[in-house]
Length: 279
Length: 247
Image 1 (cartoon, rainbow over the protein chains, first blue to last red):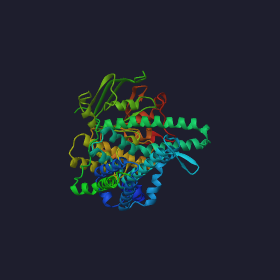
Image 2: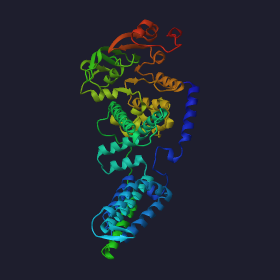
Image 3: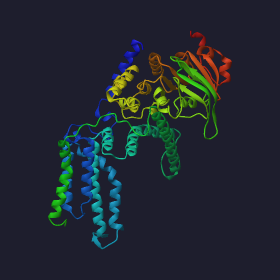
């Protein structure tokens, strides 16, 4: 390589590195860089703690209103500890909307004794079920947001593998993360090509076109998957991914810190049960 | 010394009955850079996929550095043939550049410190050490192509097989990739329909047409034979005159 070529390369590398030096530009969509106890927690420990906490919450009887208030405080404290801006948590909670819509319908469609709420006659078990759905889903979603905001996707993959999640699923998850940008860019190019020829996605008339585009995108992605598989085979892939980074040692301290969340939730559940059998 | 690649009477028919290769003969000596030229649909990529057993011939044989390709030698052959695919996004499937370059040597069972050393050396060879910890989708096309080359260099292959190494590159990246490839000093089989690139990189070329090798010789001589090129649907780009190049 010529000296001039090398200089240009270095310049370009420096420029590109400069462009992407900020945390949110490292290919992470959910991760918010930070150095809090929750960020430092090993991914597999964190995953397990989050799962346990969610299980405890889901197992709570809907009438234990006090317990849900307690969970809310614990989860809010964890969000504050991780220094995740509340506004970010609220925006990300949009994923829950479909569940809320379903919950709102429940008091109208459920059977059982009805009570008058204003001009409406609502099903009592329906209202209880709706409350339980909203409360449990909200807490679960916030815990997941917390997990996603404090764990890089690479750590998440490593954590799942370390927890002995089914290997094939972990590999599928990892390639989804790698190729989501590639497929997204492909979809964006197709959308641009449609618009360039005067297409606008308005009304049911556009649905057949969108459907066919989706089919094309699927076929292209499928073919890409086959090519990626060939590239993997070429470099000696035999069905399992090599483990490239040694698992960091995890001391009892990390486990204890992580156990704080499910332990607090379990404490709340027990206290609420003791203080009135959940009623 | 056995040749780096030996292809004899190689025939292949796709499952749908399309005949892609009809008795291909090709020998690449150690240290040679050979271009496989041909129009779209000539069987270039099919031939390439045979060199490391991704496709298995219905007839004929393949040997890499003296080792016959069969079920037993397949893993060994795949370590010996470094295959660089046309689209770097197909080649780079790991979350970071360094993980991707480590994939081949780690599969070969090398211990972690040696894998690490291979990664650094391969990235240095293509001038891409700076992007080591970056995700591949944040690289330019030229950078991706060079990292893709590094992913196979890390396996220390005896033969590099490249599919259209110049596709989708701007002129500067194209030149940079060419400089990297020449600088490697390795045995290379390059599949392309980019004739000037073949002239720049490969002293020898073969023309593959309709599944057969129809010409084999000095790249400049082949490219100067207007009749030969026309018969096989190959064309030099406007303004390119092989006579102005000196061998």
